[in-house]
Image 1 (cartoon, rainbow, N blue to C red):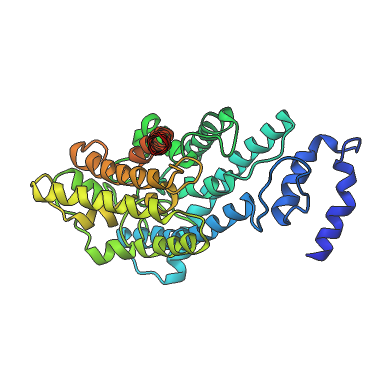
Image 2: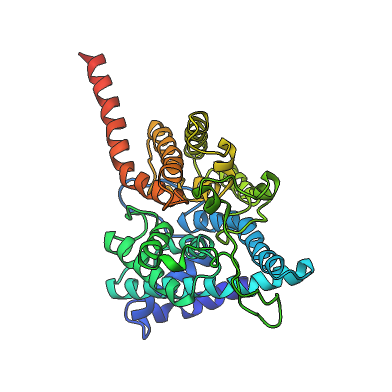
Length: 382
């Protein structure tokens, strides 16, 4: 690492103003600050000194996502082998999933970071680091059968219209990864729904099995939308051995990520807990009134509920920031997700719409919380 640092320092003058590569200063700065903590300090105005910057925060989130991603790769292979009715070792199943998922991750990062780099060069600004997380979450919240060209369109739309036009990282209103999923859900619904998109049907380097004609594989949420109890057992749902989006099936893997986020202080436990409370209470109400045949905990462990509560609802940019507002924001998302699932069978996965609605309402929630505190103080002073 010392050799790399010396090399970066050696070529740095080429990217400084007046250097022959000054046009690519933002590219160099992006790589340097990603590899090493900047040693520059503010010379004016108030500043907060901390040992961690936004790039380090994004890196910790990526690490927290690894258990869900790795299990998702295994589950892709497991579902393919199970559907084909063939036996396979752990390494064969994981290898199949790795080859099926890796191209989607590469496409997401190449397109997203390419737009980020081009935008920074055009604006003459530093490269922003927000896409480090969005780039890996987008493939994880999509069905494994989603074509690469569709992912290209979704990433381009989400980065340009969901982030850059608002001013970049820290200024976007909606979660970028969920905006990409919403774009696909409404623009290409056949690529995001149905019984065949959840299991990879590709033959990758001789791995996996050929699926029979007329193959179908409904998700548990799809079964619930039809008014029947899910065929998957609670244990399979917790472990994650069920059809679903790549990174959303394993509650255990997501819980490991939640522990990392909470232990490092990256995510708010208030927001995270409130989502589960809101969803659990609303699901229990629907069960008690006979509106749904499943138990409240089925709504929690199935679909993208856990993944959304841990990795998306807690996004510090698009979520509520006041302490009281975090409770309101989380409860609203959890309750709304279950309401959408139960009351609208056309949207069996309600977490996406619930979080996007929560993103939209977060500034309003914070405004009223702050205004309430101001009014209380005025009353005490009068």
